[in-house]
Image (tube, rainbow, N blue to C red; front, side, top):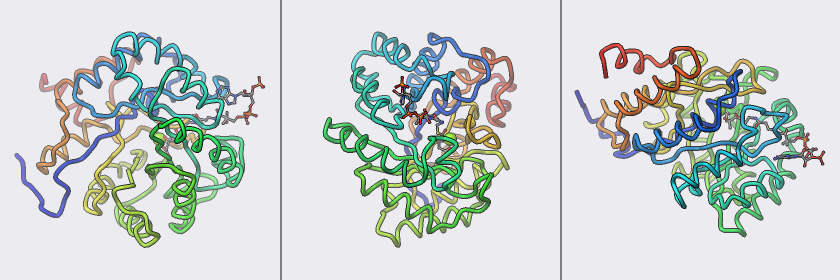
Amino acid sequence: MTVRDPALPERVTIWEVGPRDGLQNESALVPTEVKAEFCRRLLAAGLPVVEATSFVHPRWVPQLADAAELLSTLTADLGDAARDLPVLVPNERGLDRALELGCRHVAIFGSATETFAQRNLNRSLEGQLAMFEPTVRRARDAGLEVRAYVSMCFGDPWEGAVPVEQVVAVGRRLLDLGADRLSIGDTIGVGTAAHVTALVEAFGAAGVPVERLAMHFHDTYGQALANAHAALRAGVTTLDASAGGLGGCPYAHSATGNLATEDLVWLLEGLGIEHGVDLDALVATSTWMAAHLGRPSPSAVVRALAQSGG
Ligand code: HMG
Ligand code: MG
């Protein structure tokens, strides 16, 4: 049953990160053709944004070493539309690889903490910004859209709780470099609802309107859906999620699955918020992917709907 809450947005964009954030963390290498099929099925299920892969160093993330091959396969299948699928690029080398394939939408990914900047990017907090500066400038000059992730926005496994002001300061600098929007990441899933509200408000106080913020939750402590609801209440209209709850981060070992897209869709559906996704097609896709990966999806909604036959 749908019960509309007038305090919440009427429409939400789900930014699907399963093929990137989900598959980057799999111990087994997933064949390129299976990844391409995953992306195609997600798009066919109505997901408006499907983040396809990352142009990172193949030694750092071997799971996504086939980024160019995947993009070429998708371009052969989907034509020009494949170029709108966002891809992660940490630096100019990554951007060059994305530009060679005609990508029109890239995402840089910074850290709110010093330790994770070192572990994830081999750079200091300042060093990451120096690496992003020419990357964003050249991407913008080439007419690309640029999203900027900020990781460890709630807590960091090495540094503990991360102050809100520290997150806002890093986010502001990424926007000042020329990024269009931020995605605020709870990389290890330790955040809780009022912390979400406080972060959105602190960005607002620093002159960053909620329209420029997306939220990216991991479900390590089972808080992702409650945090998504808090984000909606704070006016956020773009939420990242991963089909079937796949995911993690290879350089943050306490990061487990992302907020499952199905769980989010179930919530939005109940709240009468438009999202454009066909839940049955999505569950079928996650069930198919889980069979490839050899283990069931951790999403409660996938389990419930798959058991009830759809
Ligand atoms: P580095 O070792 O410092 O690289 O790594 P470098 O700049 O010193 O270059 C060394 C060599 O790597 C050079 O080659 C470069 O050309 C090459 P050589 O001259 O020695 O032959 N190289 C590259 N090759 C291919 N693609 C590239 C690239 N860049 C340099 N893009 C680097 C620095 C940033 C490359 C590395 O640390 C890296 O690839 N890190 C990626 C880590 C990653 O992907 N983590 C997961 C994504 S973040 C995440 O999941 C969190 C998120 O979901 C949000 C949340 O949950 O909070 C987004
Ligand atoms: Mg993530």
